[in-house]
Amino acid sequence: MTSAARRPWSDAERWVLASLWDGHGKWWDGWAKALPGRTPDAIADQAQAMGLTWKRPRDKWTPEEDACLLRHIMEVSQETGRAPSSVASRVAVLRRSAKRADTERMATR
Image (cartoon, rainbow, N blue to C red; front, top):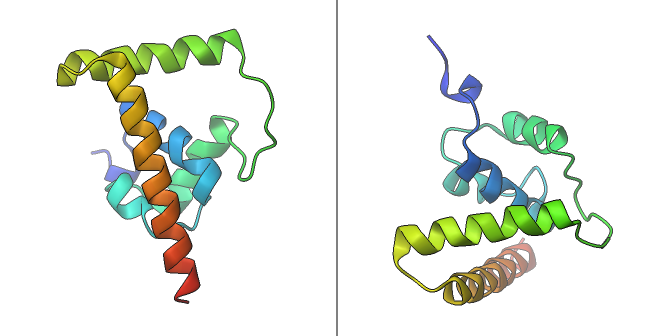
């Protein structure tokens, strides 16, 4: 039997990890909600396997990364019935909101 921590990572989980890793790193309290059933070590291992680094330098996006991002936006667009531009805008709103919440959380420590 495969434990929850050892089950294969889905594309959706990898997308969540990639979209949140740069702003939060391994020890973000929100991982339990963002990736239920994944331990901090499993998250860090997957991030390393994906080549993610925390506070990664801002390098140029590759054509492959652009294609991957567009593919995911189109998938969410089809699943939700929302326009691709609406999906992309909503991601930006959610990211800003998460960043604000993280900043507020850090300020209360």
